[in-house]
Amino acid sequence: MGRKLPVYVGIVTCLIVFLEYFFKISAITQASKSLQDWIVVISACAMGLGATGLCLRHYEIVSRRQKNWGLSICVFIGMTLFPITAIIGGGRTSKPFLFVFDSFYAPVGATFFSILIFYTASAAYRTFRLKSTQAGVLLFSAILLMLGRVPAGDAIWSGFPKIADWIMMVPVNAANRGILIGTAVGVSAAGIRYMVGLERSNIEG
Amino acid sequence: MLIAGRMIPFLAFILTGIIVLWSIQKARADDIPPIRRMAALEAIDEAVGRAVEMGRPVAMIPGCGDVVDNTAVETMAGLDILGYVATKTAMMDADLRVMVKAANVYPIAMERVREAYTAAGKADRYDPERQVLFMAGDQNAYIMGSVGLMQREKHAGAILTGYFTGDTTLVAEGAALAGALTVAGLVRVTHVAYFVVQADYTLIGEELLVAGAYVSKDPIRLGSTRGQDYMKLVGVVTMALGIILATFGMAKPIVDFLKL
Image 1 (cartoon, each protein chain N blue to C red):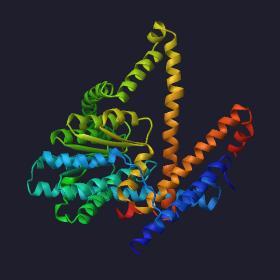
Image 2: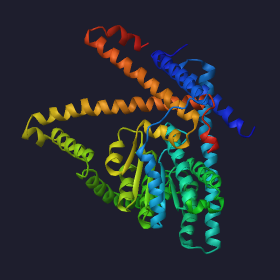
Image 3: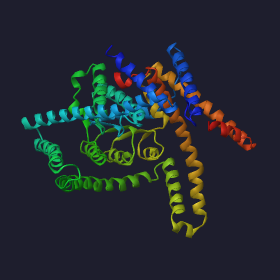
Image 4: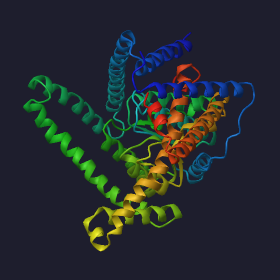
């Protein structure tokens, strides 16, 4: 029963959401709305479990003075500082919370992002390197597209915008639609397997 | 009763259901369809073998999607491949690093790895604290953490399959800079081109969704794959008919019918 119950729950929830998309039945619409609310509740429980696990793990690291145990203290400071300032200040728009957010979270986020910019530049170089036929096609198409999309390209030759439009409308569109049709059928088939209880990888591993 | 404009999608879904279930039934009766060789999946073995030879870990990122929204199917497909990668690392005694962004995906990833190590008879080598890592819920922090780990530990292989968005180029770049043999898989057409040129092997679109069938050899999934192919054939025939009708100016009644 422990294995079958999640499958039955999955079948019922899939059917409710499926029927709600295609049919206008008030009972089904209500049930579907409730299910979507339940996603929020279950996710919140999962977050609670995650936070508990995180605290236990970092408590263990600190209490045993394991490697980088000081960073674990930072985890506790972060986890307590934000809720406390929000509670004391009266919400997420309060001055104490915004001070902590602007002083700690925003600079750290900006630092992460700015470091990633170097990876983006390096990734762009790697993407447009002429190392294979596919990369060559991508490089050539990208040059034509760039020339077709900027005013300088139009000034050099008025045919560049037309070529860029053709690339976007014909080969890109055709490839995209092919991938989309295959994906849509694949997703539908997976949905059907879940709906009839044949797909159990999500609960059985 | 039926919402306007959704009759044709409903009928298409029902037709897909009938064909897929019929194909699954056939596969269960030992009529298992052959499936073409997928170089990207064969390369996973190569990546794990390379990691063993070099004494370095294999990185696995099942994307930045979740299992409770519209990225669930891709994320589950990524997790299917995680099960395969974990089986291989368990069998070949390679070190594994699974890097997860979504909190909901984390316990599923741990379970997949645990089951793979147990099934391979290596339950004692399952170490979730080292093998399955929750990087961060924030996109930038997750990318930074994953890329940093791949480079610090010089991962020999990187398997990037699931739902990726802005992180596509960055994680692939991080893997490439670490010198990893990269196997990537993505459904989204907006980002798949980056993986194609940056990764050594790529699963494109539906290939990622059938990868689970390929690696598991499960008759239900293999049968479903054949059903999907039949449905695509239906789509191709329908499009060909549409082209012919449109050429002769007879497409309007069909277009009106499709709007039902």
